[in-house]
Image (cartoon, rainbow, N blue to C red; front, side, top):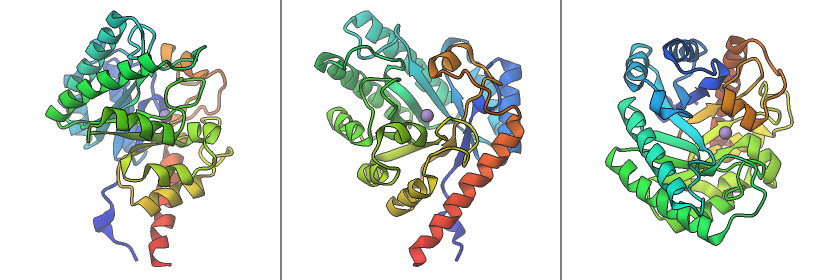
Length: 297
Ligand code: MN
């Protein structure tokens, strides 16, 4: 039944499971603990790229034989949908620096809310803002392609962007960008808020799915909320998805000033990062193992 050759999929954890600070100590702790929990990959948030030590990250990843991806959400001063050209320019400059960091870390993936600010907008997206973002992402995609990097646009709920709230909306936006190295990033936490179910959007996105976040409805322990993971993993098996699958969870026990505030992490859903991470690693691998058997039915 098992076919080890098919296991190209990398299972990862978001670094915020372990730390909210990315100085040398925080980075070392997150990489060591991600490896120890059994993951193949760590997703590193680049909320402050100018202070991030890419050389240290590269050497720690190599030392611990761990793959990496990077993610971020833009803010009001880097919003690619802004009507102010200097803000769009600042966003492109920051994302270009992120691409260089991703490359320096030996990674090939940048994802997240990289197409707008990650915030609650008080107005719908405008046609001009959308066009501005699509054009900027297109230029970044060209730069990313030169570095062998893939961009994935994270579909998030209405309280975190006004541009891409569903898988289908992401596909429409991708058509406007029209670059092979830009794909859709689905997150079960956001899907649970905005989509009809956890199965159809995976099939709709199909081979344009490039990145996956696994998060529970309250962002705590997997299996303790309302997300229908069975349907989501069946969807991944059906489309033959083999990209990164990354566990994302947040608690007030681990705080990254800006990110935690933006995401509304006010409650303590877990204390013990090590236990949470080890549990998530097993949960995800068991789900994948179960659905892999479906091809024999
Ligand atoms: Mn996410």
